[in-house]
Length: 277
Image (cartoon, rainbow, N blue to C red; front, top):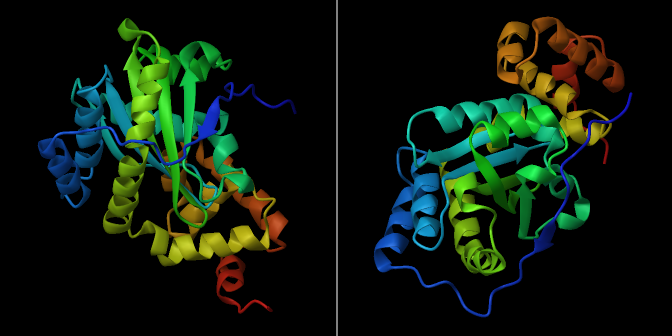
C-alpha cells in the first residue's frame, strides 16, 4: 500500500543564541504566570502575545506527542477567540498528524535532547485534505514549530501560525523566534509537568512498556491500545480518533496479533508481568 505524501522537511537544531530577544518585564511576568494558570490555554495565549509584539502571528498551539500515539492539544490560543482553533487541532490529531513534517523529528532517535525548529509552509504540503483542513480553512500560510523533549518518549511542539495576509516568516523573524526558543521551551516543559498527569498515569506507563516490547506497533494501534488501557470502549476510542468503531476493533486485533496475545486480559497481564533484564 503506497504511503501518503508527506510535508517537505525544513528543520534545524537551535543552539544557545548569542543574545536573547529582549521582552518587557510585563511579558516575562505574564509568561511565568501562565505556566501554572488554571486555564491551560493561558500558556499559548501568553506566547502568542509575546511573539505578537515582534511580528504578525495569528495562532499558537502546544501539542504533546506521547509514546508514539497521536498528539494531544496541551494549550491553544487564537486571536479570533472561540473554539475554532481547538476544532482544527482535533482534526489534525485525528486525521493528519502522521503527514506532518514534525513526525520525522519526533521519530528520529538522533533528535533526542535537541531543541529543533521546523518550518512548514502551506504550499509545501502535498496532501490536499491536510492542506485544506489545517492551512487553507484556518487561512494559514506558514507554521513554525519548536520541538523539545520534556522526558523520554514525549515531545512537545510549540506551533506559531501566520495568516496568509502576511506571507511567510522571513529570515529575520526566524532569528527572533530562535532567540525566544530556550525561554518558550522551558515554559512549555514546566507547564507540561504541572498540568498533565497523563505522562505518569498507569495507562501511559503501561503503553510505554508495550511500545518497548513491540516497536513495530503503528501509531494507530498504539492509539487504540492507549484507549483500551484507559478503560475506554470501542465507541469512545473511535470518537477520539475520528474513525469508525469497526476500525478500532481492526486496529486492536492487529495490535494483539503483533503482541502475541488474544485479548484485553492478556494485554494487562503483559503490562504488569516483570520483564527479564
